[in-house]
Image (cartoon, rainbow over all chains, first blue to last red; front, side, top):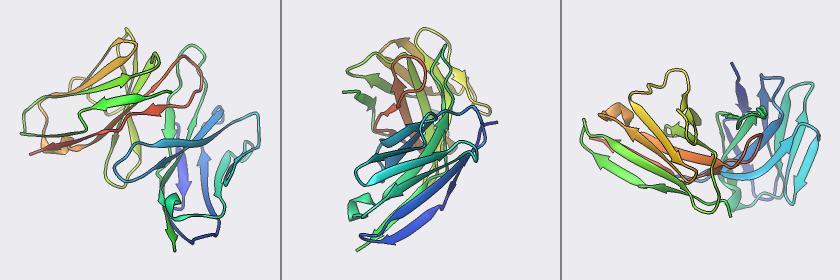
Length: 115
Length: 116
């Protein structure tokens, strides 16, 4: 079945440095890749997403890259700040035009920003 | 926009009790809602997909008689945990989207269920 692998499980970076989280997916038909940020006890919040027709997308300090051939996508956070500390989930889904697609989540990365 | 309200936020009850959790889309019509379960420090596990007016589609390993899902309107889906036991204690969270195809899911705040 569909599977999304995410690495690393924990990541600690110095404030101001960059953080990179990597994911791979198994379903070659996947064409939508959202990233969610979840703070302790709160709802996941969409921070950026990318569709398979582009290879990179950027929103201020956050960027996502997609390599469809390798079935690999990554989240890049630059100039990290303390408020970036949270758990980040990658996800992948495949469009089903007759109904909504389900999203398969990665296992999560706990990002800690050291002051 | 795209606000999803989930209620209650926390439930503590005795073993054997049935618990109902509501998920409402406040400012859009949710044709599809998803129910997830999340254990501490783990990822979101999809339990079922709920389409308005039809039976929910359950993921493998999820007991449909244990976790009853109803999506009777375009703004409300409910999850009932029947005859709950301590092993059902978890964080349950819903999400909703409007329309078909790939769209961002909008999550509720979650319900922390504790069965004594």
